[in-house]
Image (cartoon, rainbow, N blue to C red; front, side, top):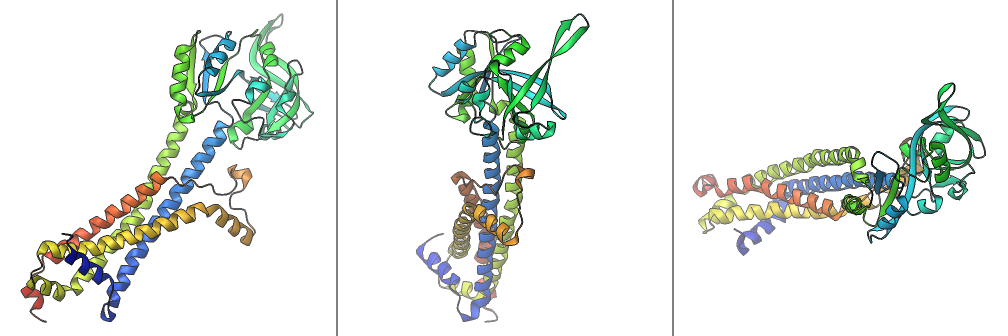
Length: 414
């Protein structure tokens, strides 16, 4: 099918003569349609991948890769668990924590997820120290009763650094007048911004010792937070550490805890890929119409080639070559244009914002400034393979129709 003669004829048909300018124009439109479809598909997938990566990174700045918690009771032997975890070469850091829900009252009252942490150990498992907007996490000293608030939570309760706020936990103490919730006055010693809405609007950090005293845990903690070298292996690391622990623990990781969220993002990305694939499909249909027109214009040429000894299979090869070359050129240019556009989209958006004097991605709404993009080779290869496959399929019917041309009928009126 792809002998030198069909290949030479197919390539020659791509170089239109003066009387074939209309065919050349339709071929150029076919290539342009494929270029636009491929570039659009690569760019949109890169933007969605960029947003997914940005959200994941910001989420992992506030939550641990792996968490080990006590089974039905506080984890008393947490130093042994921390030592065991740090002995694993896949672990970067491990830190104890205490976690409870509560209410914070400043000028207003708001719900908060209160985390008792050790500032020194916390640096190894989260980005809290790097995300501080005011103050430092080292100010969370045992007995000082200081609290670090998410910036959105601080705004919600009307508290600033240096203000006194009242923390009430969902734990109760028995008194002669009945059960009353445990409450304590804290001083706001800092605020942070993780760039992730849940953390910024609900997290409050206090010293580990202060949390243990309020909850009367003694030396116990809620669990141990762990950071690993490869975040995609967090599930395997969590299971291994749970099996090696000397005390009963329950293991979880960031993928299990946020499975529904990331599954929704993956589904959205897949659906968008399928929808934008219709653009490439339309371009392939345009290629079909272009080749059908070419076959009609070349009826006499096909008949002459048949009388000179060209077989139906070779005639089919001529038009498969032409359609495949159009698809290959369109795909190559589209991939190049799409990758370049995706890699420079952030700069383009900033230039548009500067020229128009508007902010397309306000940080107070999206919590992400600019348009993040991530170009993955696997995505580019998938788009290219899809386009080349559709282009090849688009050539089959016109090529088959050309191979069925009857020389006598085609030359009857020539």
